Length: 280
Image (tube, rainbow, N blue to C red):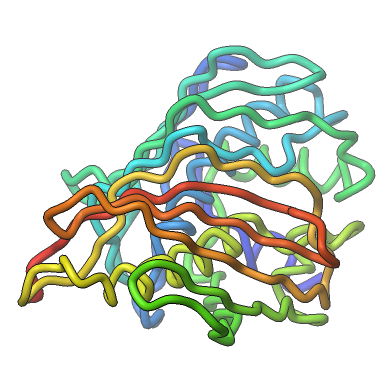
């Protein structure tokens, strides 16, 4: 399968490894990409933690929908950069993995994940245990060839009703077919939670840009995301109703409460804190 370990895999090599305790790794962001969103940087950190957890479970289980209770946005990552990845495992067993992690670009901190928890589910439901074990050996050895990732189609957000600067609704159509489903996951395609978070952040920043207290010459930038919860898997072809509501704190800063629903049921919730940033 050509897109397996290519279309949505963000660890090129594991450069340091203490079983069940910590790991270091790297990922070369292809220079040909137009951008590399912060949520994919966070995905890279989570994937490194997943390799530690899967190896500890002898590839019987894997963490799925492992999200951070706190995600700090420290800086953007440009195409062509080499990400330095690091995770520290707080606990890991057949039930769940708890960890913290970070990603750097050069000497600059890009993303920091705190208080992450990933439920462990049977590997065989999602992927081939043998292929994952072989991939792990490759990553711990010479590493995978860089440049495999060619980007992901950004799901379109169709803006709906709302009160300018206060609330905003939108619809997101999950593609029925996309290369990343062959990587996430081959045996049970699931829309990546980080792509949903990216769409929700884009919606939140649209709402924040309309706030009347946003200082002139600035634009809203994400600072911290908290209370992230994924309540169910999102299959290909799903239609999601997104909602964003602003709780201002003054000076152009604020918090936006986010949710996503499918068929009337809540599938995810989160909160985004943002602050004004001067336009370059």
